[in-house]
Length: 298
Image (cartoon, rainbow, N blue to C red):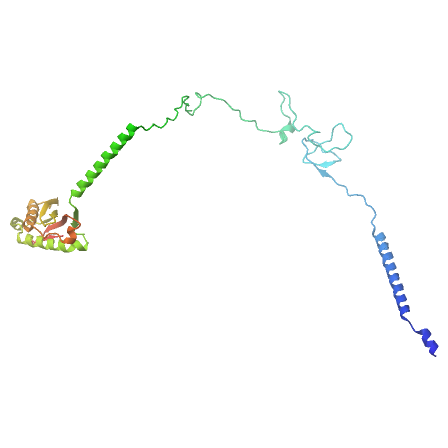
């Protein structure tokens, strides 16, 4: 019983042998099967498809050839001295045949765009006398640039004298301007605060003296109007000048205004803050002689 069991048992060596056998069998089947498939997939050689090339030709035929070797933009019957089929080119054909003198161009040449060309414009040479445009004549003897004049000692002395003379004139002008009175013009539109008080006192005095000394002739004749007067006052309050800038149209009123200023003078001296800046004041005002026999300055 024990011997039968040992004879039927499978050992590890048996398993290894079986595995090797199966591996070799699978490799042979794979190799043989792959080579068989490659042989079965081999395609027989087939003839290539017929092709036709396209080219450009330089001449044209009226009749189309029966068997064409190429495709082109125009019909052309083959010709030449070679038995082989040669591609048309500019070496095989003359694209621009030169006509003989006196021959008229053929119909085929007139129809081909390659053979037609516009004649070049002819150039005509004209002289300067025939030209419509005036061509300035070039001076053959061009003036050469003159060299800068050399400065000598005499010229330097003369220039220094001119500078000294100009300096003396400028100094004299400054002295003259310094001697001129510093003037300030005041009118009804003046808004500077440091002149407001002086102008108000001057106006009040002129109107008060004017109403007290209103011209009797103007009252009796009912004459009224307005005028523009410029009163120039020195720093001590004295009247320097009276200028009638615009007349009222009545000599009675013009003379009355000047007389009123004379009666009201002298005026108050300039305050210190005005005397520091100016020596003379121009007070320009409009004098109004109203119909109610009253005087106002505006």
